[in-house]
Amino acid sequence: VLTQSPATLSLSPGERATLSCRASLTVSNFLAWYQQRPGQSPRLLIYDASNRATGIPARFSGSGSGTDFTLTISNLEPEDFAIYYCQQRANWPRAPTFGGGTRVEIK
Amino acid sequence: QVQLQESGPGLVKPSGTLSLTCAVSGGSITTSNWWTWVRQPPGKTLEWIGEIFHSGTTNYNLSLKSRVTMSVDKVKNQFSLRLTSLTAADTAVYYCARATAAATVIEFWGQGTLVNVSS
Image (tube, rainbow over all chains, first blue to last red; front, side, top):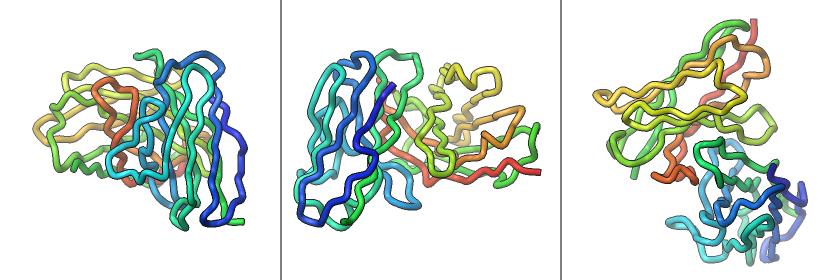
């Protein structure tokens, strides 16, 4: 089980966002982060806990290993206000699971 | 880069069967990737349904395994999902997607198609 906190984060453009994802069992570094804007499909941001996907701006960074992970968005841009999901797949072929999501909203 | 497009009915009756197809463009379905279905009920998080390799090997979510069948058509460069015994709980946006060769990460997503299970 992946637990994301907080459920909602209210911030202003230019501020830093810190999102947490906690796994009930260790997932090593098999942790990814996705962004979902309203009405859009998810977009891969971070894979293997800390690697940015192709084309993802440097203001997005991921850290952590084992059971505790963090997605940091420095200097929030207007297009960053969205829902963020973490996802693990540490035990292929068992199903990957997603966290409940963190909504980053404009304060 | 690869693009994925879902197609299928937007409305299905309870106890019926859902059939969706995902057309892959910008790349071959015979690469070393896993082709994936994920769904998202309105206002809720994402749920992985299953995956298929171009050889036909599949892995399904145990919670849906008894109702799910996936197939691949290498000639048409597409893959499909079949979900039986539908209930209102199956109402969701259904996404097709491409996962990495290790299948740990979903790299590309289709735009999604809303399926409503209702009489």
